[in-house]
Length: 353
Image 1 (cartoon, helix red, strand yellow):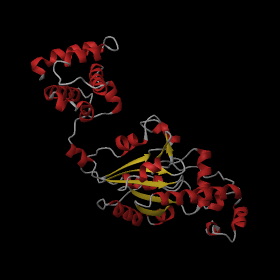
Image 2: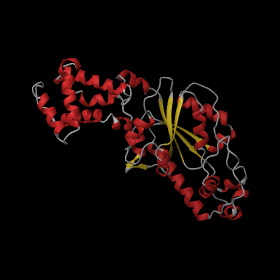
Image 3: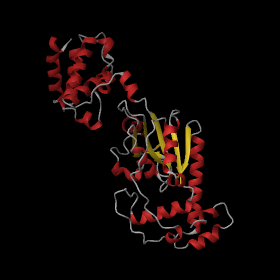
Image 4: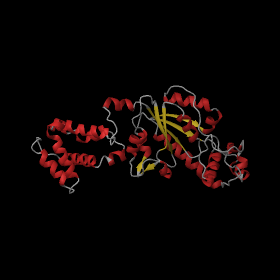
C-alpha cells in the first residue's frame, strides 16, 4: 500500500474523521484496516495510529511544541513492520511530509543518534555563591563544550524552557544530554545541591547517580563565611551575576551574620557535600574550590579540560567578581564572629579578613 495505490484516499478519509466526532477516527481506522491486517489492532496500537493522524491534521502543533523528530514519532507505529509493511512505508511518507513542513525535526537513524550522543556527560555540583557562574562561563567559551545552566533549579523556572510537569528523565534526555553535532565533545549543566535535590517529586540525585559514565565536578567555596556573606548580600540586592561588560555593583552595603546562622549554614553544606560524594562514589569526580579557581584560573581550567577529555584551548570567563572588598568591610559584626569561632576548625576563615 503506497501513497499512489489507494492509500491517499484512505488518508484523506482519516483526516476528515479526525475533524469529526471524538470516536469517529478510531472507528474509521478499524473498519478500513480490518480487511488488510492479519489480526485486529490492539488498543495501544490503534491509539498510536489515531494520535498520529490527529496530530498531522492539526499541522503538528503538539509535535512542534515538544520539539519531536520524525523518527521519534514514527517509532509509535513500527509495530506495522510485521502486520503491513506497505502501510508502514506509506505512513513513513507522511512523516517525511511533516518534516518537509517543519512540523517535525529531521529523522535520525540509530547510528546517527548514537554518534550525536558520543560526547562526555558531566555535571558541576555546587552551592550558591561558590563560583559556578565563573566556571560555567569559562566552559561556555570552549568551542566544543555545550554548557547548560541550572537545569533543575525550581527557583529559576522562568529561565527554563520546561516546567515541573516535565519529568527528570525527559529533562536530561531532551533538554540537557540531547543529540548534538559531531564537533561537541562534552555536555554539562549546573546542579545546586541545596536547591536541586528533587524535581517534580523525583530525586534528581538518584537519576544522576545511575549514570555511571557521568563525570562530576564538585565545586566548593572553602571559606563558608565569604560564601554566606555573598549569599546574604545577593538576597538583598538581587544581583547574582556580573558580566565582564556590566557596570560595577555598588559596594556600600554591609551584612550582619549571627554565629548561630553561620554554624547552621556550615553544617548544612558540609553535610550535603558528604552525602553527595557518598552517593556518587561510582562516578569520576574532580573536586575544586572557588579559591583555587580565582587564584589560578588558567591552571584550574586546564585541569577541567583534561578531566572532561576535550581538546585543549584557553578558556575565557564571561564574569567578573561582584565583591572586591575584604570581608571586614562586608561583614558588620566580623569581630563577634571571629571571637565565637576562635580555636575551632573554622577559625582560619578570619585570617585574611
